[in-house]
Length: 545
Image 1 (cartoon, rainbow, N blue to C red):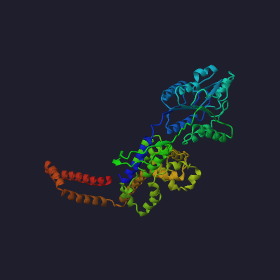
Image 2: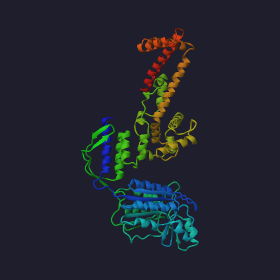
Image 3: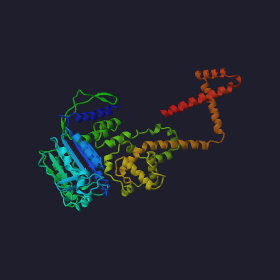
Image 4: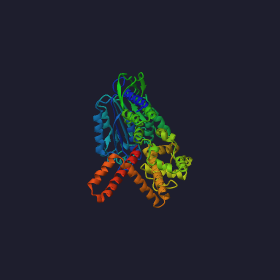
């Protein structure tokens, strides 16, 4: 390992230690319950709650919450997950509940509806839905900051069904008072007694989209977050939906607070990948929130661009913003030295013209040698226009299909154009890189695809070159002459190897053990075996090197 790599690994570990050794005590435990119900059986399916809840869960995990999560839950599963959440709340200093799905208000009570609910009367709510007060009671058993967020005010067919039988059924949810208890914030996706929008299909609801935008903002109180969410939703829905909050939190509660980091003791010795190195002291205490530390460590890992760097990042941030990219980098094959491949000599036999043509179809060493910035690629969505701008020739398209196939994707039969099967393979590749799966390539995606598939593609080219060289040798050799020359060469090699004392002793022992009548034949056989093995060993050793 080079000194540079050891230094970078040390820097990464220092950063990790700075994160896990805060100036004060370890951060207080914070627990969250996240539920997303979409697949209702008695009423039409909702498009976005499960997607909304999954995104919120990921965001809360990045903020350091222990998350209890469930999706498309039946009645017994919902009560079970509330019980699990209540158990984990013990000793926690903050609790958050986020629910997306159908909710209903009857009188002054709000209910969250599981996916298997069938409500024929108001009485069914006590047995087939979860009363919000049940959840609030679990949260308020101890002194802590409690936040309840309900994106459950959607247009509700359950309410329509019950309204015919009960005058107390209302649109939307009923306001929940917080004055009787301190340290609680209630947030609805829209005003009480109003209906919220579910949002576009394959997207997020307007409320959750705004919440995701602001929830991880550093050094901002939860009340400010909700103020910003309200403003965004009001504008994005053309003033049709206005989120509602009610809070009795005293002071400021920040979802993403700044943590003070302590300097690392300079006497600490960190074990590097290939030995122990003395680490320098970290800078003086400084304020960095977890998201900023995540970005700093990722940038350091990218600059080093070695497996050790990415492993150090994952050790510090196993669920960080760039964890998926770090795992992709670790899974990526090491660059291949093409000159050392078995077919390199065969490639030379193709001639300078063919080699130049093959090289021109490949990306430059600059493209293959540098890591592609996955985050930058996300800003570049592939479409028909971006792919047209690449001006791909028929040769380029066939090359890209070959690369996809060699990397385990299935573009189908090679074609001069990109049809449905090729588009499907491109989509699959885009999904593995965390990109929007459009099936069309953009400039940075093209570079990334070539860089990722380069090792496998070079091996395939080398094997082809080797095969072509063998074919040409056979075609230019007159019948019989090659065989005669081969026999003569074998005879010369046999005499040469027979001069070796060890080989000669083995031959004499073999001949002595057999009769004179077949001694010559046996000697020739053993000589052929030894010679063939020796030649194979020499050639094989050369290939392995």
